Image: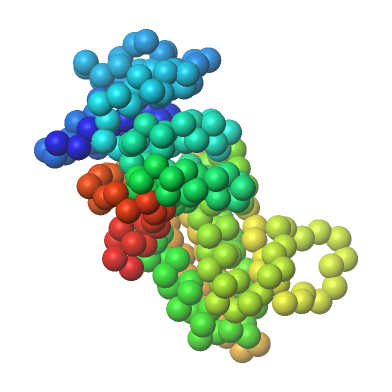
Length: 259
């Protein structure tokens, strides 16, 4: 039985992941980490499953095999630095994490002989989308590239982690380093750059489009998330995959899915 603690257990995604974990025959939800301010620490997130505040991480993870973080970037960067020393494997789906933090976390994973999965998006479809971004970039190396992402009006970070990951993949394949986040004024002719544009409106779960445009044609590749359950299902897959590993490495969702 894989014993799981979910950080951000009362959030939009975290609550779905908790429900998904509870439905698995090989998993047990043994705790949740919630906001000290309004997350009802000390209560229950499910029958018999306690909610702990961030200052009680050691207590919450005492009987856990995997900790999944679906909090905010600021909370994750504090919580996750304390988890590796507790010997608990990690799955991280929080976006907006800094490069400095990710390097520190990778070092802690290696030092404490645990394993982790870090991804901006758990969705199977999104990970296939990223794979195809690389394939298209390799073939259409001289085409202009623009990325447009749309999310609900309560999303805190922009651009989305999924859009930034797509841009990173294209950059690594093509060597384009310059990234433009929106444009205004007299910009002149575009140079060798990747344009990234964010829309925040309504209750859109998530939509990402990458455009490869030449002088006589263009290709548009789009992923649309209809339900956050797609992310929760991917998270459960990542939990199961990482649970038995002890290789001192940080892995991607592409590795989990065999992409």
